[in-house]
Amino acid sequence: MGTTAAVVVYGATGHTGRFMVAELRRRGFAPVLSGRNAAQLEALAAEWPGTGVRPATVDDPASLDRALAGAAAVVNCAGPFAVTGGPVVEAAIRAGIPYVDVAAEIEANAATFADHADAARAAGTPVVPAMAFYGGLGDLLVTAAMGEWTSADLVHVAYGLDSWHPTPGTREAGRVSHERRAGRRVRFADGALRYHDDAPSEQQWTFPAPLGTRAVLGEFTMADVVTVPSHLAVPEVRTYMTVEAAGDLAGPDTPAPEAVDDLGRSDQSFVVDVLIESGGVGRRATARGRDIYAITAPLAVEAVERLLTGRGRTTGVASAGAMFDAADFLRALGPHLSVELPH
Picture (cartoon, rainbow, N blue to C red):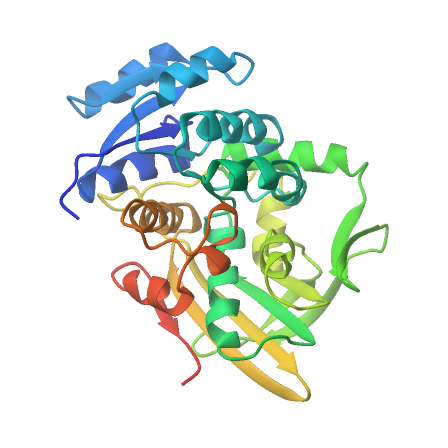
């Protein structure tokens, strides 16, 4: 693209935020570091000379307006998104610039669609929530696999993580979501989010080789239950998680991710396996990669670049699959992700 467009990263000092800043720099953007802790932002900027710093807090709209002034886009990496999502979306709409976030919180993503669609559409501002490993990647895979189908009976999204070392941000977001649901669990069935107290069930899922058949928790519900039905006619979306990864996430002593290469990635590997059922016919799409936090950066930055080069399909609030050509988007992630789509 050959651009020096300024892109604000709100929550730049977090684990995912650092990946985002590095990816923006790699692709020729000028990242602007933002968030509430000025000292931490300055320390991070010292690692990348010439990087701008604009502190802002979500309870001070004027500070957000200053942070976004003159920027081309904003990427929100600061969870819990139940707290940060609304204020940063509203600031982006006031600034008239695209907004992308990496929210995995189901209710926060649902609120972005419910609360900001009209204002974003009226302003002609693209808003893409959940442009991340959870929510965005699954939605792109489902959309690409649907192809010419206009509807389906059931969508399965199975997450084959060999481990999950959660960041402090992941733990805090989970805590907030748990409190918002009063400890209940959630599913998407009969065309709506439904809350329940059913115990999680363990079952088997056969992932493509080499992962093979693994024990998974059924209805380990992730943001795909918001993104996929936001634009596809699917009455039920089920998501699954390998038992090992779910156990890691639940364990209070599971450590945060540890970098094992010069890109800061952990040794975690993943397979995302999508199966769509319609009238007794199935279609499958699969993505393989490394480090769920690291892969979020190329997903979000690819979205930013496409929005800034006129390759978004709409304005207002839209998921990844609705905003972009899903198959083309996934192919563009080739250096970071191995993808298999239906022929």
